[in-house]
Image (cartoon, rainbow, N blue to C red; front, side):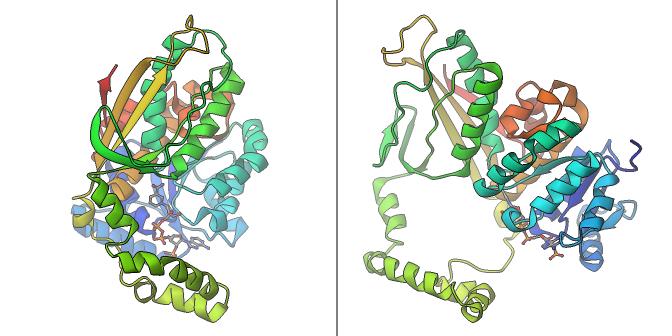
Length: 385
Ligand SMILES: NC(=O)c1ccc[n+]([C@@H]2O[C@H](COP(=O)([O-])OP(=O)(O)OC[C@H]3O[C@@H](n4cnc5c(N)ncnc54)[C@H](OP(=O)(O)O)[C@@H]3O)[C@@H](O)[C@H]2O)c1
């Protein structure tokens, strides 16, 4: 099929879109790509703001008008390229028509969703169709869940390959959730349960690897680390004991307010007021974003294949994944590298298409090396082996 573009960044006028466009200037420099959205004026303004920032003429970048509520505009957009990078969220509300248009047009699709319900729905509805069409729909290509998924695919799977050469009974002993703050050997922090989307995405990958390659599934729990027990209490109590007591009443008030159109509008118009200054409609400053660093430690435990199942797993691997500007920097770089990997290495990807998680889609590609090289690239350190 002849297509005039390799990639289109859809939802390019979003806050995330601006990072994706700016980073695409480097990451997709060998490809023909354009931007798309529903508002031409906004898209032009976005491009001229970036032009001023990077001091380059960007008038060569094509602008395509497409609206989620106009199916034919999505079809026309999808037919023009080989892959759509979809930054238009929330995906539960806006995502499906774009996925459908891409599958119909035989175009690959990556998104940066962190919404399990959207992922589940896309799997149920479009996995078979995507395979039939030879199209990759790879979800959760942002901060959620590329670092966790690639850490798993790169290092933990390697260990798993060494440890479990034969098929073993799945998931024993049970990895119970630790409900209380605890420390781990390789860190001085105190860890509390954290219900991240990563767990959902990694479990999807487990099912995929177990069903397609009979790989024994790993179990996964996610925690967030705090410097001290005092810091945990401060967060839980929002720095004040009295606020902590009022918290349930505040949640009930928000639930009531979200039931009526007029109060919903007020909540959306003035989040600052209703959250006592915690949430605002202001866009986060890039200079502030660049001061934020993140680190994720993946601690894996397993046993050699000859060790019987009833013996406690002893072999350990600890991998630390870190980076800066996680929400927009890492997300934009990860999304672009996922798209570039589909364009360059789809012969190393499984099943000739499907709705896939990053680990199941990219386990055999060079994505880790690619992602390490980008401006907001991830650093992978093996701490214990
Ligand atoms: N995985 C991660 O770690 C991660 C990190 C960052 C963001 N995200 C996700 O990325 C998504 C975007 O976030 P954001 O904060 O950048 O969003 P945002 O600034 O609110 O932008 C939303 C975008 O959707 C577009 N849009 C809305 N309705 C549309 C329609 N009917 N047709 C076409 N376009 C439409 C908007 O276009 P207009 O400009 O024309 O209104 C805008 O470009 C969210 O789902 C967010 O959760 C994920």
